[in-house]
Structures are given as C-alpha cells and as structure tokens.
Image 1 (cartoon, rainbow, N blue to C red):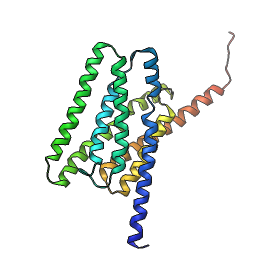
Image 2 (image 1 turned 45 degrees about the horizontal axis):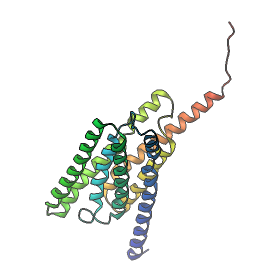
Image 3 (image 1 turned 180 degrees about the vertical axis):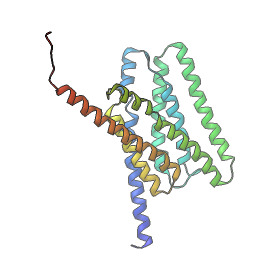
Image 4 (image 1 turned 120 degrees about the vertical axis):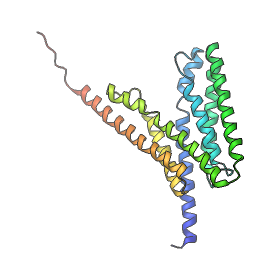
Length: 235
C-alpha cells in the first residue's frame, strides 16, 4: 500500500478513535447526575465533597488548552472531549454551590476562582513562549501530569475493594466507561504520534483493566459465597 493511501487510513482510524473516546467520555461525565439529583431533591449537599469537581474542571481546562492548534497538532478530539468535560464540571460546581451551606459556598467559589486564575496563568504564560515545540512540551507535561493523577485517583477505591472484598464502592459502568475512554484515546494518541496523549491514557487503560478484573473477581466470589448452603448449628 502506498504512502498516499496509508495517510488517509491513519487519519480515519485516528478520528474514529477520537469520536469513540468522546462518546465513552460522555458516559463518564454524566455519572454524577444521580448524586446531584439527590442533592437537588434534598436541597443539601450532605456529606458529599465538591473537591473532585474542582480538580476535574482544572484538569479538563488544561488538557483542552493542550488540544488547541495554538499548542499541539491535530488534536481537535482532545479539545472537544475536554470542552464537554469542563462544561459538565462547571454545571456540577454551580449546583454544589447552590445547595451547600454558606461556609462551603464561600470555599467552593474561592476554589472555582483559583481554577480560573490558574488556567489563565497557564494560557497567558504558554503564549509567552514563542518556540512552538517548547510551548507544546510545557503544556503537554502539565496536561500529562494532570491526567495521570486523575487516572490514579481510583487507586483508593481499588484498595477499598480488596480490603472489603466487595465491589459496592466501584460501580461497573463507571469503571467500564473509564476503561473504554482511556483505550480510545490511547489509540488516538498512538495514531497521532503524541506521547502527551497516549502515555496518560495508557496508564488509564491499565488501571481500567485492573478495576474491571477486580470487579469480575469479587463479583463472582460474592455470588459463589451467596450460593453456598448455610450450616446451622443447634448446639
């Protein structure tokens, strides 16, 4: 096959992987909706924390910026998925601020402003770097670090599953969406020859496989234990 034919095939496969990643990411982004339905119904955030949404917003904004043509090449799918993610996180944060108590309102609003300021500093600071390659590397490392730390966050849940031998705190569809999204953008990054995309998503894919493996193992173990006959002593 000639080089002229290989290029369109590579582009089509890359775009297909990016579209798939956007679709699977949507499933990930909508997963907190039941939590916010409960918050809206009770008009209280109860003991829920808003910090994950603050961190996720900053992560989406930084990675969104990396995907723009001003920073990297041919990464429009990275921009679209993170634009969608940032929009969802912003809505969740606004809802959290609306229904939380006064003390937390002030704290959450302050953290939201910190997110915005940090993002603006990264944007303005990176634009000051005239060398495109160095600009890409600086923003790419920031994006990569943010993504890896986000994908590493389920390690606490994995540890909890192993300790409790229960998958109660690790929803299957959340783990599946994370794995499918990471695997899609792993392929997208490889096809686009972009290590700042495929390295963090490679880590996310591995962690997703671990989560699904643990879910399968402990779900099966729980089912087998529930089928065992009860031994009752009348001593």
